[in-house]
Image (cartoon, rainbow, N blue to C red; front, side, top):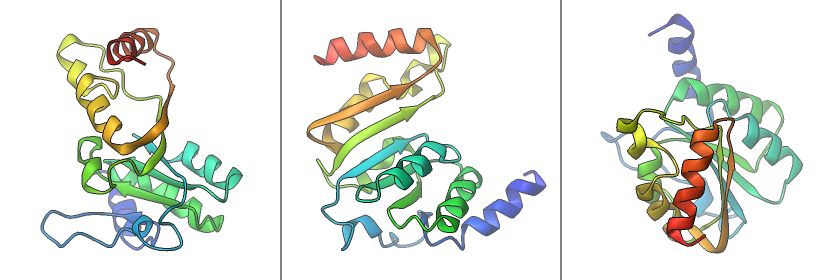
Length: 172
């Protein structure tokens, strides 16, 4: 592990706005399941990386809860530290795989989902890892409230075309 990753891994464990579940420990308390967050409009940014979009959204819309989800805790350290420095009480980060999202959110609890520049997994064998593949749409349909939306930002034409085909297949 690179020196900076190791330092960030140590720092991120102390951040109150970053949830780091560990399969060897009991489930941590999830702030969005209790007041004042329970019942708030909730937006997920999946594969959020350093959380730039979540940070921007949270500062612009203080009455909406934003949760950035990523697997890499050293990436979440950046967003967590900046969120605390800016005093953003409507912003959290969760270290988890997108496939595990249903473990952390109740069915139909999310208003919208953002996929911001996800890895397009261009090789054929990587299709199942694309955040717009059928398996992920099944997860999103359980997370989203009726009328909820999925937003995509990408610079990959192939990923965009694949996603549009998936949306048409799902009836969107």
